[in-house]
Image (cartoon, rainbow, N blue to C red):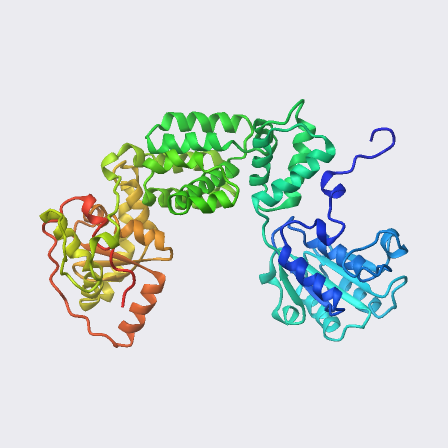
Length: 540
């Protein structure tokens, strides 16, 4: 408190006071404006969306508009009694702390009382998904037969937890995450009004770190402004937020792909001793790699979202897509464990140790030949116009092997063998410590063995990216399984959608499975294995 005037947080000071000041929710604002202009507003709304995207702000604006004495139906005047006074006709309830049936019953008992000042009583229930089932049932009774003077606005970040009986009685508006540009624009407005000295890069980083939430962005700006001694820098932003810069993330990923484990471990030690949030760090690495993948496919999209794409260019020149998917998968799994672990640093270190072989084993970095260049029809072994050498011709010829392997597995399906192998497949685990095999052992262990015969094994994965990783490395996976089970098997994997089709046809005996001899004698290296199955999109 300075001069008996308490400091007002920026997010409160710059909370939108009318629809024009609401950022990034143009479709919702346009719909509400039209409804109020035509006097066709509903008695109950649900505002759903991520935190800090404007749900409560819009609810409060609506509450003022419906009772404002001004003739402007889309903007509170902030001059009349209903706009300027602490209006008792606007009742705000935090369901996170008042989630019981007693509170809702009290609401139900009072809702029939006439408004004290305006035309409507407006009930704003925040985090409505936190209500108990009994409380929802009590609320439902009121929504079914609301008094003419009552309007309900239910705000939630988890709309899937709200009963359908409630949803069906409300108009639902989905608030979206704000774009980096929208947040940056609003931040610059505040920066100019408050005369804050800050680097442009720091503004962009605040906008990016807010993950689409305007309130989070303004809060972070407020905190960094209090923290920085002079002009706010990118370093100040990350020090305050417990994160690291995009350049630091770039350096860690580059070290991973180049096999420099010493650099990574030293960095993790430095961040940990400096109080950095390692869960945030893991998520930042995932997000960076996500952007590298998008950069390879749609550079324009990243630019339209406000990202500086130049930082992703170097990584994209040597990072192979299948390896990126593998690292993302391992990091996402580690984040779940880190949240409940007493030693999150160790878990993060293990992820990098496990994946460092990606950088060390240059021979394992495989690039695909696009399907459209191969000119192969899925159900044909005829190669038209190919000018490749004989070894590659054989590889392309066997691009139909996915279908053959599936049918061969089912043609000689052995239920007892399947049950036995499900128990034994764990025997591949000791090879996790082998630099050559570790990432591929993880792929095997993450899969679900669904069918087996004396020669073939069929694995199922929920994610298409895992299927890609498995089928792109079948030869080394077969090598691992042979070392562990002491028997040679040929393997193949499918995604969940494909497996459901296969299972239905097999159980209903709608399809006859005929064993076909598979000629793969000329395929001897891992580099060829990725090309084996690329032309099969879906099992039919």
